[in-house]
Each structure stands twice: as structure tokens, then as C-alpha cells.
Length: 195
Image 1 (cartoon, rainbow, N blue to C red):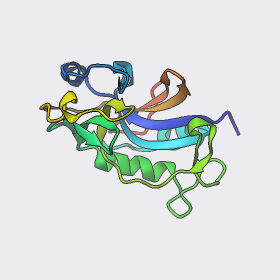
Image 2 (image 1 turned 90 degrees about the vertical axis):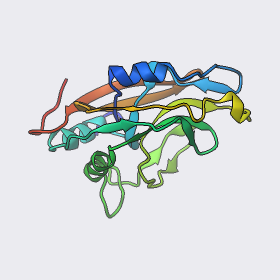
Image 3 (image 1 turned 45 degrees about the vertical axis):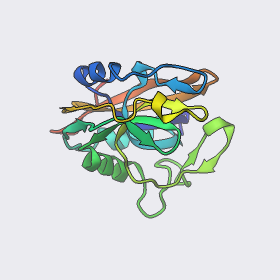
Image 4 (image 1 turned 180 degrees about the vertical axis):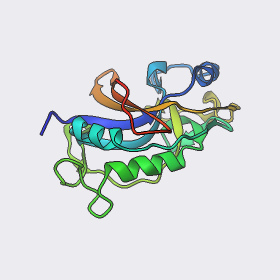
């Protein structure tokens, strides 16, 4: 078994969507931490700590459907602490990734067949199965922020057709997470892996 990394599968926004997200009025403060632009993505599936080669083997050998992603309609909250731009249209792709990256009976790691675990903050815990909610995280709240200081309701519109998905590693540091693309896989057509 190879080195285990904390991984997720994601879709990157198009340059046009990135330009639109730049216009969202987010002001960093001690209570609001905007997500760096280079980390904007739609998580299709969080995998937790696992062997990237096993995931690459599963995704690289699969035919992956194309999808049309739609941004908006407006900036909102996901839970109590996450400011997001909703994204619709990736549900089928997320379901396909979920099917390819887990055992539907045991929900186990593709390599060890052990229950999926997360390495958040050095703690190990079982990963719950959560329904897919397409979004791009714009900011995280560190405490109570008055709603009028958030860009809730800021109108967003647009769509894009992702050409690929990315397998991304995430390492958490005191200043936030650092993401690195491990592999990319084209959508539509025959099974392929981009470098």
C-alpha cells in the first residue's frame, strides 16, 4: 500500500465563474476568513485519508459523464459557518464518483476495505455519508458575524461545462488548508487520465 493522503474529488470553476466570484463583496476580518481564490472548487466527494493510487486506478479506468454546472442563484449559507455560492447540475457526476470510490455495502476505503476515516486535526473519525450539495466555499465564519456584514443574497448566474475532474490532496496548516492536484480525469468519452 502506498502513502495515504487526505483526498477529495473536485471540479474547478471556469475562468468566467472565477471572475464573477471575485465580485462577491467579502471583507476579511477576525471573524470571517475568505477562501483563497486558488482553492475555489466544487467538491464532488470527500474521500478522507486513503491511497491515491487506488483512487487513480478506479477513476482512470472509468467512463465519466459530462455535466453542465450552473452557478447561483445567490450567495447563501451552508450550515451556520460557511458562506457559499450554490452550484447545480453536478449531482449525477457526484453520484458516479461516489459509486466508483466506495464499496456500496461497507462504505469502505478502496484499498484497505476499512471504514473511511478522516484525519481532521489529528483526530480519526468515521466519515458520515452525506448527500451531495454542490457549492463553492467563499468564506468561513470564526464566530458570530451580523448577517448584514455578509454578502447573503448577492446574485450569481452563469454556467460552465467542466472538461475534467481533479483528485486533490489537502494538508491543513495553522493558516488554512493547502490543496494540490494529484491527478485529473477528462469527462465524457473513453476512460482516460490526464497528467
